[in-house]
Every structure is written in structure tokens, then in C-alpha cells.
Image (cartoon, rainbow, N blue to C red; front, side, top):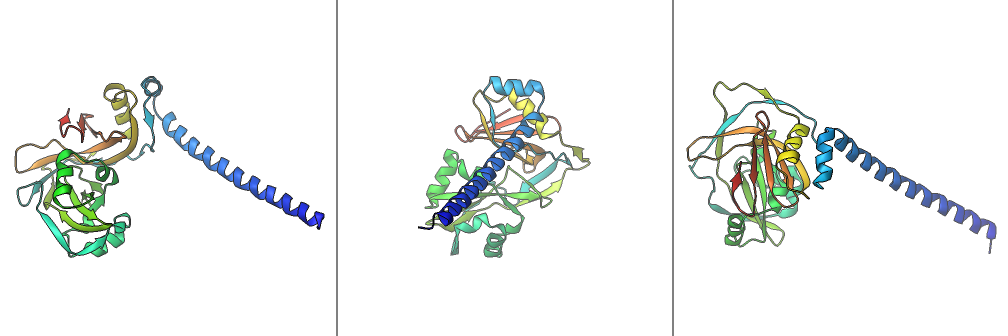
Amino acid sequence: MDWGRAKNVLIYAFLLLNLVLGYQLWVDVREQADTNLDFASLSESTQKVMKEKSIQLQCQIPSMTPQLPKITYQYVNGESIGEQVPLKDKIESQLIFKDKELVSALQGVIPDIENYWYDPLASEYMSKSEMERVKQAGAAGRFVMHPLVDQKWPLFNDQLELYYSEQRIISYRQSPIEISALADEENQKMMPASNALKTLVERHLPPGSIIKDIQLGYYGQVYNSESQVAAPSWRFTLESGDMYYVQGVSGDVTVSSPKTEKEKE
């Protein structure tokens, strides 16, 4: 055996192993630094309450603070839940994770599909009535998409449901809406997501809450009228499935829970 060559091979192997371990350590440190940066951006009082209540933050805190107006929307057919429509040609459900391919496959089949945003968290958590709709569709589950305001901000109040079975999208429910700017409404600057989080942590979130996602979009209380109003809001999604909506200007908080199907101020 050539011991000199074997020795060199072992040295190179150990060097390679050290490089791999060093890279993994660097990645872990960078991820931890990013998390700490988000946590450190919160006020000391908020950090203190989070520690006392064992509240975890598992996502980045958005830094954007755009100026947005309130909007009005109404359902073209007068109903918020449309009829189930079977698809003649079943679509591979994997496409839901590839926006362009999904839009291409469903254009001409589902109206205005190119102006919807896929919501993985709303797809995951379902209320009893939503589970019943999935059952009625003969599906294994559903994907949820929201219409976009100005082709950018999701309207959380409304959703397009795509039902799938055996890895294929088999049918959908959609109730077309018309969105317009609220009369005489001026753009107003959003409060930072960190401020909205402060409000939730100190006044609303129960101990042990785990925040999985923070999204900016539109949301509003639903009233018994043809036209509804929605305001730019931060949506905080917990691991429990509860979603907290913080109005971006007033700071008002609304809670939506799939367990109770009720909203609370």
C-alpha cells in the first residue's frame, strides 16, 4: 500500500469535511443573525413581553410602509361563495407552486386567474364550513387564492378555492368581485409591521403563541350590504391557524379563527 498517497487522501478528506462543516456553521450563524436582527428591531418592552409570554417569531418582519387607500368591493353575483365548477381537463396540482405555469394552464378556464395570489397558510387551515365544501367537491383538499388589489396586495376577505384530488385540480369555486377606490379616500402611510406586532404581543396574543407569517394586504369587517369596505392591514398567522388582522392606520385588531368561524374585535 502506498502510505504516502493514503495519507494525502485522508488529509484532503479532512479538509473537505472541515470546509463543509464550516459552511454549515456559517449558514446557521447567518440565519441566527437574521432572526436576531428582526427581534432586535423591536422595542425593549416588546422583547420583554415576548420572553415573559414565551411568544416565538418564526418569520421576518416586513420593513415596507407604503401609502395605501381604503377600497370598496362588491360581488358581481351578490354572493360571496360561488357555485362549484368542475374542470373538464384536470390540472396537475403541483402547478400551484409555479405561478406562471398555473396561470397558463388555467387562463381561459378560470376568469381573471392571473390577478390572484396563492395563500399557502389559508390553504392549510380550514373551518368546518370550508371542510364541508371540500367534502362536497369530492376532493382531498383545496388551494386558496386571493384577488389582488392593484395587482399587488391580496384582498384577504375574498378567495378562489381550487379543489384537488389524486394530485390533480378537479374543480373550483369563485365569486367574481369588482374592486374600486373609496370615494374621496386619500393614501395613508401604513404603520410599520413592528408596531403592529407590538400591539398584538402586549394586548392580544396568548402565551405560547408562535407567529409563522406576516403579510400585508386588505381586510375589513363584512356587513349586510352590497358594497364592503376593506382597509390595508397586516395579517399575522399563528401556528394554531388563528389570524390577527391589524388595520394599518388605526391599529384596530380583528381575530379570525378557523376553529370557531367567528371574528372578534
